[in-house]
Length: 323
Image 1: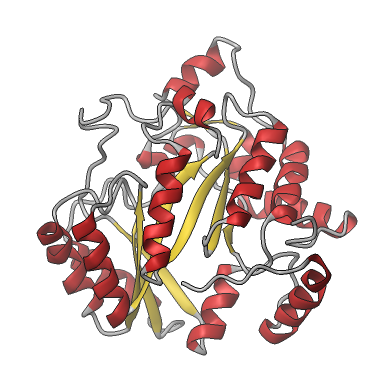
Image 2: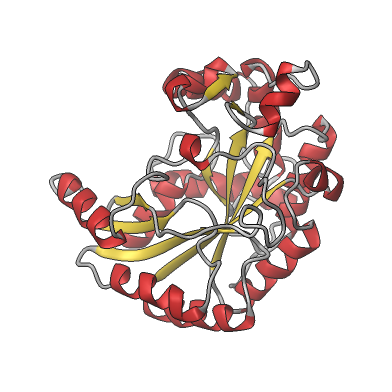
């Protein structure tokens, strides 16, 4: 994947040109606008459950998982047990009056965690579904092997492919504290292997993780700006029932970010990224009935996004401004 690095004098010119080309009105380059520009019409990304597990939960690395993780709260398909094709075709049918093009998104857990044969048994039927123009695969940087890299390169030659890698923080101290089970070097190595095969990558990052400071969170943005990472998906820390984070929260050891502070941090984070990196999301959402304990603004997605956008308006936030 060829990645262009911009001189600071080019940043505003590039970003303004991109906004005009994509008819955007945001302070950052959205993934949705990128897909529309690339494929000529709107594309719907459909989450599906491929039935994969995770080395951080099955005992390979840990039995407890990451301190913050409960896929049932984060993914709408985490508990779905029907076949991937059944899930996908049902969602396509429901959306067919509004969309013609779809990306199948293997979302819960680590969807490259298995043999090449297992991946083929799931990936190949999915990309053959009419209307599916690509595949998005959520995974971890330590769930890739030489054989899987080569298979992904083959997929990438036949259809659109996007690999989403959980990073959360570029601080090894923070990763260890939250039981991630991998290092930032693992992430960089995986990104480079994928980039060498011209495969798009997305970094999942979380703002507000225990162990991180405001400066270390922004260091993560600075590090991502140096790497051949195509996109970034940004989440806030959420306190989810049944996680280790909930224990820390109940003991008064951690406190989730207020919306005002999150708006400031996510704005600064975006300002440090390159202007060519697509922003997939600026916040996550959940509901109390799905396990959300705090912060409560996570349950009011549209209202919270409007608040963040207003903050960006008032503070002239532009992606890449400080890169």
